[in-house]
Length: 377
Image (tube, rainbow, N blue to C red; front, side):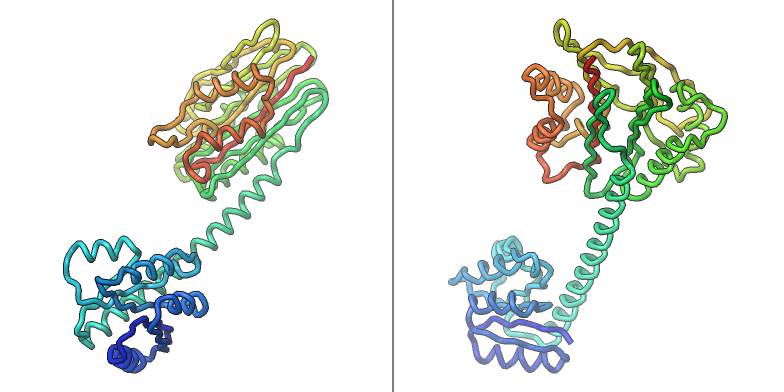
């Protein structure tokens, strides 16, 4: 049995609708006042509303807008009862949120069919909403799990700050940093293609594999060895067509030397502040992990100057949607970092606030991950 709210000030129409709907097994609540109808809808949560619409009184459109604007009532199926027939009137009503029309005089067969179809669509919408909520809850739990696996902030002997902001759909970002021995720090950030659990699970697998050093027979101090082993292990043909990008580096704190390799990932960016601000992209162009077997990767070395800051990030930090419909670019993000360093405001939270202001959407469309490594001395 479904609850149907009727808003109509004609006693004859009230009787006709009440009898017809109750004969179909529905519970019917009737009011002749629009404001009271909105109040009843908020109290009773009907599955369907039938409201009379007279062209001389536009308040019925406001009734429809008010009901549809309520988050808890947005799925209510709203039918206007009218003797209007112009396309302009129909467009006006549909823009206000109406779902269907029943014309006067009321035909019982038409009424039965439209009410049955409306309630069926209402139930389908509710079922879809529940599934969406369950999926969002599961993605939220998965995001919390990924967050729990990420390493804590590091203060000594160098400073590492990080941020992970998952998108609503949850992407494939993951990162880690740890000491291979007292002098060598391994650091990497990866991004699996796609969204949802299908992208998250491979990333977690890589993190667990690298953290436990489960790749046998490789030199974890040598980035190209790590990338080749990952490429052999995670070929798309055996990973449900999933591939991922990764930037992997090893820092020797004694001689301040960084060795790194890249597999299709955005370059890391180093800011050196002495004697003047210098910006260097650390990149070794190659294709992502898993695309082709026997891919060649290349190591590069870089001597880290004093008072330097290294940023490693996913493409979610710069592939932002702008108000004009265009997409922000990597060079703009580097300019933002340059300005932050010049102003002495390179705190990650400040940077993320600026990215949120640049992004035209309510949330980030992709996972946003960023590491900030400060080499103070």
